[in-house]
Length: 131
Image 1: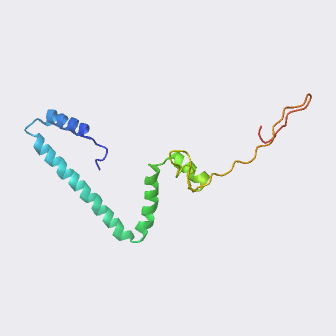
Image 2: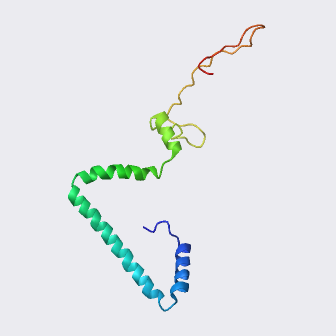
């Protein structure tokens, strides 16, 4: 629940609580906050267990798309493009420091057409799909 809260934020909250509540009421406020957070966690756990018991095996079917949505948060465009273009195989995997990849063979580049200078009066090739 508090994964993104660092020590600096906690220190700022304690100092703010010290100014707002004062040193005599700060321990009572911290105890109240602890009880409230614990009660909210118990309510959330109870609601999840109740939904799980009422839905039964359908709960797992509902949970799968939610986990997929959670995975979108960690979306990496480079990984997605690599997976789509190379069927999940990263062509740079297995490269060692000298640039050779050991047992994997690099796919050969298709042969390039021979390029020659145009003759005087000759029109350049035109590709209607490229324009």
